[in-house]
Length: 486
Image 1: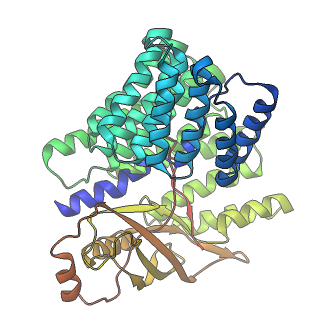
Image 2: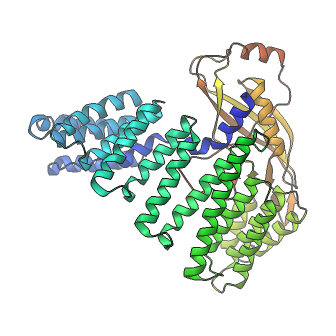
């Protein structure tokens, strides 16, 4: 069960990420005097530039100057106070920020109706802070309150609630309740259908987002698992394919069967088929169609054609098809025509690109190792080469402070990984001595009783992890994956 838990965390972790700065979206714009308004604008500017020390100091001055409003205009005073709490949260001071936001809400609610729209920003800021603190039940209740306010004011299917739906999805996933997260996402589709119409072009972003979401959900369930989970996995991929297919049909009806707007959706469909594994042949059909659309469309250019070829090459690398080399080299050659296209070729081929499997900026451990000091950052540093056929070779651990069990899982992941290889002077080349640092976070900070014993029994050998990036606030588009590594 540890292995299964680790793999699920590895695959769905991009959907769990909520950044501190997300809370800045819920700044109030209180009605203040001219001088105070000038201060407020400078605060926002500092905050947008992540200059939180300057923003916080100025915000404290603004809060002090607004003191006369405490009794005269508690609503405005509450907005200023909530903004101050938002800054504290954005800078990582969650407990202090939450306390200030709650106090500001008391002023804001003193003379407001419980379903007044003015409450929404403060409620959302409070929910994001609770989510960051791991107060998942409280966060869910808070986001639902914000949603209920929009229901009362705008109706059950209003589009203003979509951010709340996104955060509820993230909260459900953090609580290991993916079925509830699925329901939230399907509800967002109903909202879009009611607002825009089921066959409107405005619904296309929602269909693409949901296609990406359900493809990722499906890939989070291992193929070799119990029958009930295999059935759930199949349902997820069927939903994903249905979303992309529906989007393709809408584009074809409105713009034609050779329109370039089909390309992102076809890429999403191909990515879904790749993650599904059992139907990868359909991924090639989708990418071949993309290339045909580019070739037949007078509005396409060299970059469109090269990107379509690179997508196809990525598929061939993942499926170990020898056609990958020729496809990549043809794309590189096409892009040598102008200085601008040469820059694109450099971005695509100057360093190896991780294609499969999915990567995460942070991976999760059930418990902190006994050997780790309180607050110590958990990590693995490793070095490896990428061959011309897109595989990791010569893997070795440079440093680590996590148990060997997780390192073994990372070794398996890296050995299964596929990369777009580097091209130099028109030739595929080996890239040597790539180094990465994989971060870990303990879900439970209490060290496991057997972690230290396991590390002593398993002396460090050539152990291996995965790679870097990605930050995905509640839900984002997931194309065929590309992760630059240097």
